[in-house]
Image 1: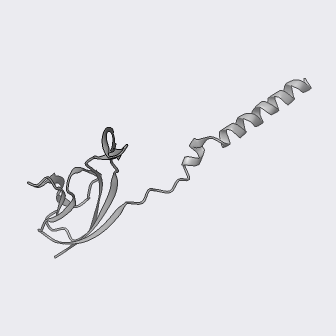
Image 2 (image 1 turned 30 degrees about the horizontal axis):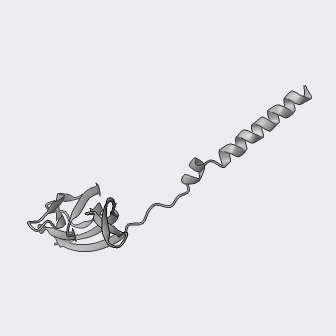
Image 3 (image 1 turned 180 degrees about the horizontal axis):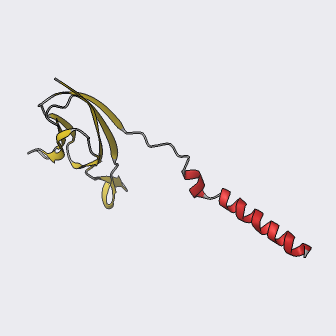
Length: 135
């Protein structure tokens, strides 16, 4: 009987110890990620704000603005990556959009300048744009 109680207590302690050391329990304390770029912009009501993000690549809206008539990514005739924002009609105040930009891949040099097609370098940038919409 004593062996069964000791075994059960040991098993319970082992299970509690293993759960407290799991990666999942530590993730809940992680701080939120900070944006790579924080942009503040003043926009007059009825006007369109245009942000040129890069010369090429991919731009997506990861968190949409709340008070927009137009909030979209696009490219111009030269291939530059743009974000355009027009506040909704009659809105005055603040608004915010989160963007994710991945520049076009650039080949890296290896072995005396020979370019490798298997090791393109890309990095994603998180951009937050905070708008102040005025009259």
